[in-house]
Image (cartoon, rainbow, N blue to C red; front, side, top):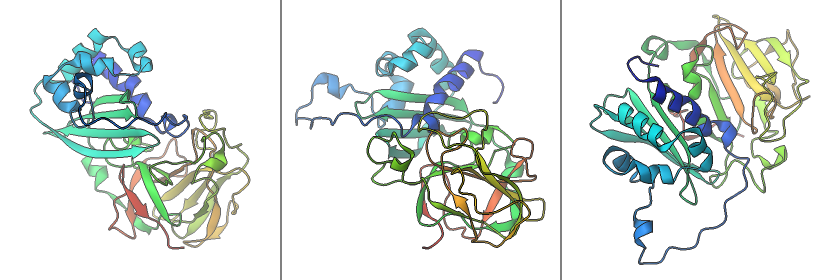
Length: 334
């Protein structure tokens, strides 16, 4: 984080930001269908805070109105006075905001904005009943030298078909990993249909479109680490004792190691010491480790240990696709 801001809004960024993590998406039951609005809306409905008027309200309107729409969980974390004080402090000196992402996923609409300098970011998640379910207010620090230092290896995305980037990008607004040097350029990827990552109630791993999908070697190399015995979690319950879960680490030379994490228990198809070619099957996607739902965690690091090595910006063989938060893209062809 940059210097010069009060500790109070730093706390706001930390505690409210947790509501926007992958762990908060995909496991709650769907909201009740909303009735069609009449042609003539009530004054209360006209005053509703939405993604379209959120920033104008935060800058020039009533912060009380925003606070009233926060979920009970957020209101338990921060009082109205604390919210007003921290928001005013953060907004000071900011002239304008630009919306950078907006997408709907699992009954939430998420929008994010950057200020005119690109050094401040705000992210808000709205439920179908207009309740503000998540709020992140945070400075945006960049690391230009490593942002531009791409891998020497050209990688292919390690899965087939269409996928959705839940976390990915070069700031903490689009990629919470970015705050940590060891995972700065990591990706969290899910599969979606009709703006949802699951079908049914989302209570079983098999409900998730990503669960069980085959994983492939992203480039030629030698397998240097394998874990295959970590149980898959019940959706919504994470295993912090083994954060990466089942994993395959491949040494591609040039000090570059791909790390494919959260693999399905017992599905790893390679052994330590194996030489693999790009496109070889290495396992199936699961929900093991510090994972709330079936998703791929993929990164390239300058060493084999995800917790001590530095993450490296990936050079993709297909550079036409944007693997940044909120975007869908095509992986390997079927």
